[in-house]
Image 1 (cartoon, chains in turn cyan, orange):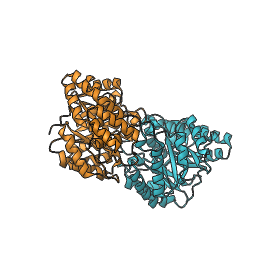
Image 2 (cartoon, one colour; image 1 turned 60 degrees about the horizontal axis):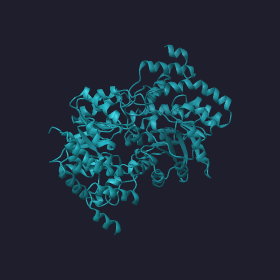
Image 3 (tube, one colour; image 1 turned 90 degrees about the horizontal axis):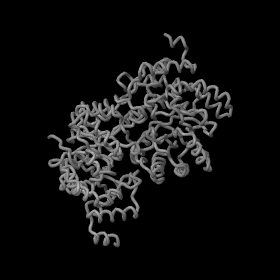
Image 4 (cartoon, chains in turn green, red; image 1 turned 120 degrees about the horizontal axis):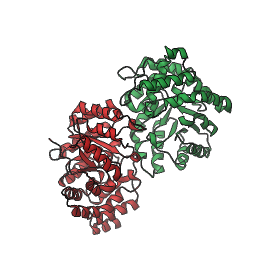
Length: 312
Length: 316
């Protein structure tokens, strides 16, 4: 499946049963709902989908279920969280077998500590690319969320690897984003820059983003897909009008502590009647009633929830 | 067996074969050597032992080998690196089954992002403690190495988790080391305060450390056991003398980029004839000849390698 990155790729949540296991029927109906929006792929088994808190076998099962439900219509990008090279290759092969169309390669703990030798990052991605033979999405993640910012030199060299198809920037820093765009544009072939920068989603397109891979896409999927499509088409005024309506919801969902954004996204989907419960798996905790109320207000303001529903 | 952690707890390296598998024979020989220095305990399957780069089954195998080789003489603390609560509990149960004396509980990804609700780390540790009853060592690791500096309230409540017996403090910040000491001791006077700060090992004892759980303990183990014994007995002059001899070696091993310290430690042990090869598992990479030479000089300065041996090997 060839992925057209010029649009929205929502990172979806994983509906869970009351005892925090995968809720397969709820996952299937939520996926059908998400697939109705004009999305270009879905990103599963990433942070939004609580992948760090799933066993490898569970991640494989999530891929199988999602591919089975919407794989005929929507390409499925699977997160690849691993700890070491051999494990990444082994996991990646399993995800390919389960039906993933591409892998989002998470930073590994060996990147921690400066300086980061470019060869270490390069070898890791090269091994995954060769060993799995799927398109790869690079991941530039802010240190405050456990990632490492890759230098322009490293990004340029990574873009030289044949399987690399895109990069998700979640530096949360506009200047870094511009540097990433510049580094990617050095390449002879087209590599997509995907914004993962929740604080400046709309602005990312002004700065040169090709598409968006966002956890925020798990909730107002239809509106966000429209906003991205308009931005990609250069219709910035209309695009910004949608983003302005969505911004309070974005801020409510990603308010500190940011780890709660998964529970908040699920609460929003419960309010909409799209998933049955907001359960997250420990160590994540449920959110407070106050947090839930601020999500409800933001959902109403975003036009994602009718006022009457909110009162009831 | 009551754990006595007041002293050196070396985090040991994991000798590997040419294809980066566990080298069991070398591991056994290396452990016998370390055990001769009579450390208080051993810490295995932590970063120094490439724990994050091993399959869960390999970690259990390492634990089995270590216990069968030195378990009758030395308590073995196993690193518990997990991602979520259920997984940590399952891994901890397996580790207990094999026979570890305690667990060093690594920070998890969910701690990232401020503020950290103390409930998150408290419940995580309580779940592990309740499920296994094993003694737990808390671990504060600086953010630059992927960890989290906990707020006072979180530390206080974590120390009160029943099975907690010690904390390894590795903020690499002396001021924080003192602040954390006060929080820990106020919450639980019996919680053993372990330094993990390779950048001020001796000074940690001036600042209230009661032991050291450090990767540096993987080399020059005997000298560090002695240094810490002096420091704990208040013989600071003697302790400082040893530490001054060892300082160039610490600096060489933990020079940036710090991730290379595992390969560098193995290189030092190869020079001493205690290990057969420096192999580390990818994504870690081999070190350069320049790094190797720096280590050789520091080993000689530390009295850990004879000058002649160094010259002979270098020219061969």
